[in-house]
Amino acid sequence: MSEESSMAAGDGRRSILVVDDSPDDIAILNEELRVEFRVLAATDIDAAFRIARHVPHPDLVLLDVMMPGMDGYEFCRALKADPATRSIPVIFVTVKGAAESEAEGFESGGVDYITKPVNPLLVKARARTHIELKAAREELERQNGILRENMKLREEVDAINRHDMKNPLMIVTNLPGLLLADPALSDQQREFLRMIEDAGHRMLEMVNRTVDLVKMENGAYACKSDSVDALKLVNQVRSGLGPLVSEKRLDVRMLIRGKEPAAGSSFEVLGEQALVYSILANLIQNAAEASPEGETISVRLDEAGPGSAEIVIHNRGAVPASIRGRFLEKYATAGKARGTGIGAYSARLMARTMGGDLRFETSEEAGTTIFVRLRSC
Picture 1 (cartoon, rainbow, N blue to C red):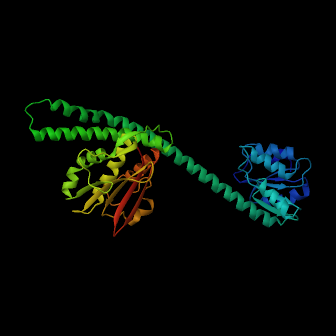
Picture 2 (spheres, helix red, strand yellow):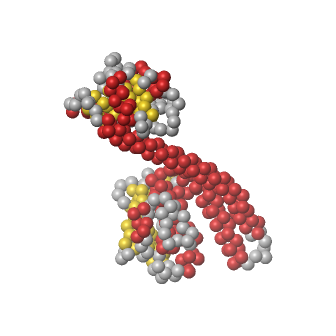
Picture 3 (cartoon, rainbow, N blue to C red):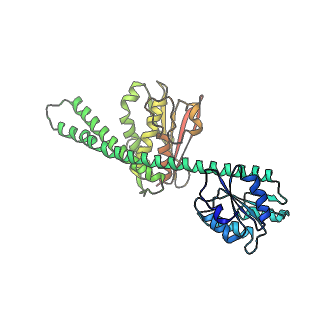
């Protein structure tokens, strides 16, 4: 079999490159393999390199270790060093049988080891196995490529949606201010307009925050560390949840260092105010939604060691068993018609971005407790 004929266009079958300085050994393998595979052959290393690098590349190399000039181990290392050929599996075929020789074969990048005299049926069976494994890896990589492209497309669509959402939100945030200039409005109407204005600003902040979350996931977010009054933010969140708290008859209790906060109290943490607010808003709202009616939600602010503060949020509802193992993962949600599954995930991501962390405990008996660790001032 000449090198030229071995490099001719294929017929759809998987190809095997047999590298051996013995034409008789090549003929024996060719006789058995050619029924199922397209057999390529080389009796020297230079020819083997030309065939291996020719496109389409062989699907497998059957390689004799004892070759003139460069031996099989060196040839295999050269194949694995070349990005174009490194994925080609190599099976060594040799008269050597010592354990050291086999170890060297695997260390050089081989996937299997067959000793001479070979059993052609055994060679074909092993060749088939490794070619199928290679095909499976290629299919997995192809699917991963499709997944990566789909994720990229989704991110691009999300970016467009975020941009398009800002225009109507600007109307929501700007119109209440114009209407509030009307002196004929009642106090209740003014309150409702301020609630609409506040909700619009928060929605606009959420749209902007999704951009930041992508940066956090990629480790590209530049976090600013300032002194933030967490107690003030908890009060803002609690005020915004007024309708939900009233509807479910919930009692939201706050404690600072084990005591109810006195007038003028504060609890300072180090971080970025917008991120701390988002963490508290996500977690306290989740607690209110998950809590049974008529129960108490507690928010405890306390030191947790030198340079560390902890915010502990508890409600009597338990995380559904179906998502407990992945509660802090992206898109983990259950039992919420409008749940996105990113509340707890984004809270932990933001806490970690600020040098802290988040964990939780849950059970049917004790309910759910979220522990947010942040740096203290």
